[in-house]
Length: 620
Image 1: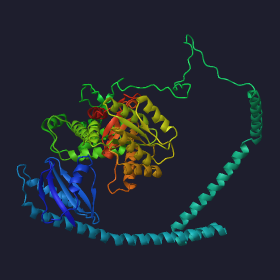
Image 2 (image 1 turned 180 degrees about the horizontal axis):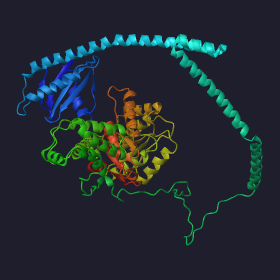
Image 3 (image 1 turned 90 degrees about the vertical axis):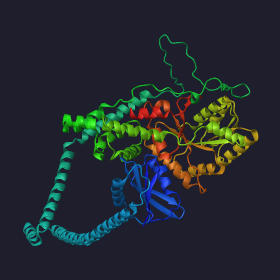
Image 4 (image 1 turned 90 degrees about the horizontal axis):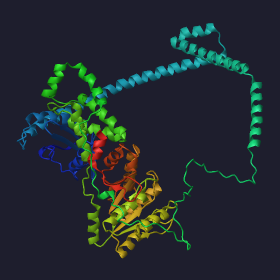
């Protein structure tokens, strides 16, 4: 049974709801649909599933882009109603005829909806009955085919027995006439197979005889002799130690030892260079300047793709259409431009799945819309895609960490940040960059070495802490990282540290034991921010990493409201040139904003994500 059907504008004004249904929906499925699907450029999907305590709903929708209307139907997921799509199309057609932008009440649409609903249900019943009528015919055909197959198999067996008994040609021909053409065909096939096998044997035997085996033996013997001679010549006296001589270039300066390890004092303590917070300004506090190039550049490929379409129409008709505008955009009009944009996004390292969903969403938002005068389809599609990308990449909440740190300081508790991610993406290095940036803003920081799994992880973090002159809390290796993080937070509370940066072990998204340990760490310590550290080099794997991290954190958590990833830190951004698609893939699949971007190897190489620059690069 249909639970609810409502019509509202893109601005959020509800124009009509079905009073006849009048079912009170559990939870807020409409709000969730708008927030999680329609605003996130996922409107190209066929349906949306919403789970609430005690109910599971399926939501389907359609748009009238020219009028800016949204039609949404809600029903119980277990019912699988067949007439919902047809009903939405009928309601869309009838309501668009009576819609007036100045009007907000449509009580007279109740009777129309009742008739449309009965019509859609009747169509669904007729379709269901027609399918049931077709099924017995198919079953009869299948039974007949089964009998025929069984008959053929029997004939094949008899032919096989006949061939095995060595029957002569006359008997074979007589059996062929008695049993029909199928036996004759099978018999001929068997004969061809036998001849093929015989020919194969003859060919292989002739090939073997044509090849002189004695020559091969002579070659192997001579090869062995030469090998032994070479081996004797290459033997070196074990007493003489062979050392590689360094190459000397012409006009080269005197050779220096390339040893960059920290020197050690006589008492065994390392001399580590101290990096003062005032030596350089972090790029986080610098405003990035975007070059004022023309943003209306379009590739020649798109022009070439659109030329065959233009050749079909006359010059005057295409000119008149560009001046007067097209009546309504159809899916066929959008496909060439959308395909070109999808290919362009994929060349910029956007995951294929994400690029396809974005194009579907843009197509759903433009289909049925009137093309403005003096505009082309590609420019309209590109403007819609640019608007969609800006909406996705722009954070929906505040990402001002300094403000959150001061708010936690007023409550006399440290602000806890946990860095998570796969192996080798640069969690420890970028943790040190974040610590350097916080030190520049007079924030006291403490590091927590909770990577008790990888060898050298504690020493690496200890080196960063000594260079930055900040405290570090460590318990060595093979300890429970959740307990280490808890003790580190307690220590920071006693010492009055403002921020605790928790370093965790790198783990693959499919490693369940390590993912369970990470889920325990987050559940036990309830950090203020969970940062996923990901490489800007990844393509399709970004979708798999983030979706599985969030899924594992949700599935393995013992809390009813599990913590997921709150933000993203993109590393190695200086190595990708214009392949910036990983930022879009990660934000789209997780809904979390990009809070930091690592763009180098020094402590100052940390900056904010410039959304406009990314969008411009993606569409360039």
